[in-house]
Image (tube, rainbow, N blue to C red):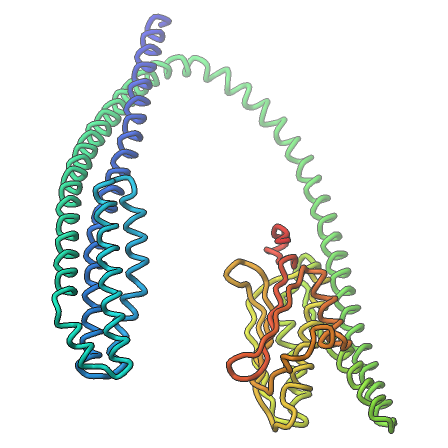
Amino acid sequence: MATIRRVNAWLLTLALLLLCAAAAASLVLASRAQQTADAVAQTIAIRVEFHTTFSLIQDMETGQRGFLLMRDPKYLDPYYSARMAIERKLTLLERNVGDRPSQLQRVRALRDVAEKRIEILDRTISLAGAGNFEEAIAEVRNDRGHALMVEGRDIVERALREEAKVLVSRQEAAANSYKLLSLSLIGAIAAALLLALLAVRTTLREFRSIANRRDQLVALNEELEARVRDRTHELEMAREMAEAEASRAEYERGRVELLLREVTHRVGNNLAMVSSLLRMQQAKLDDDGARSALETARGRIQTISTAQRRLRLGDDLQSTRADSLLQAVIEDLADTALESNEIAISGNFDPLTVAARDATTLAVVLGELVSNAIKHAFEGRTGGTISVSFVMNDDGVPLMTVEDDGIGFDETESKSARRSGLGSMIIENLSRQYGGEIRKWKNQAGGTSIHILLPRLQIMDGEKLSEDRG
């Protein structure tokens, strides 16, 4: 019996080695086959890019001739589109054939042809744009442009022939890789079958030994089951106690969460009451300056009140959705604006989650920006439009934007004068804690655009803070 086991062990080891070798060979060949397939795809892509680049040069020529014949600038659309795309295509071709000097030389030659052809086309379009259509048409009729197109076509044809040769060789390499891969898989399957046969044989022989021990195991199993029953009873009691403790902890957590949200709501209500008291006090004042100061203070308190009342904490009790909170702030401001004029306020907010401690700060900054626009952007007008957004820009940085189509701002005013107002100071100081970069300019509608980048504002992912962007 010992001799049989040793022989089976050696055979099993040999089968395992064969299986591992076949599997390793399959992995290597599969990787090579994938690399070859990628190379074939790249070759096809290079052929397509050569075709496309030359077609773009032809499209430029078509657009130029359509403009000269019809004298309608809309025919120049294909020209400008093709001209913008040619540089990208040539750059992509140079990158794709960078390891092949002959093809790289052809791409550079094609670039030279394209630049010369663009120069001629630009000259004719410039002449036509100045009203010299006859001179422009005469420029077209000479053979320089035709000679460049013939040269470009010859470059592309030679490049395509070379790519065709490369494609054939790579396809042959891919076919060979797939053949070797198939053979490796067959070898792996054969090794697996051998392993299965040896395992069955070994298992059958071991059954005899197992039968002899079965009676002993039955007795031991009965003893073990008795011990397991006792231990299971103990664990069940421990589980019930743990569940009771967990239920109490969950109850306490829910109670704390409810109290926290109640406190937040009450703070918002108290601030709303303060805002109402300021409004009542404002109504009793005769001094316009004092009334204006109280109205400004009341608006800021109202913004904080709205943020507190609309604050909805997440399951972690530390985060909140910025989009719903900021939407509530601009809705309150819109209601206030509609009391006296026809100002439309629209919002665009990404579903971003921020720390609850930062939510009120964002609401105050946005409230100040929108309030300033309501007060100053539409002086002398009956209404206008204010667009608000809080999104992640292309660089993954939070961006707050407020734009209006009002009267704009005085660009001759010094920066120190612009920042002297309390609202501007609040915006700048609150934004600075997030690395805020404030950009302000006069937009195309004649109004004001304000963008605030907040690179150090922490955006939360679920219950975990993302890496600090600052």
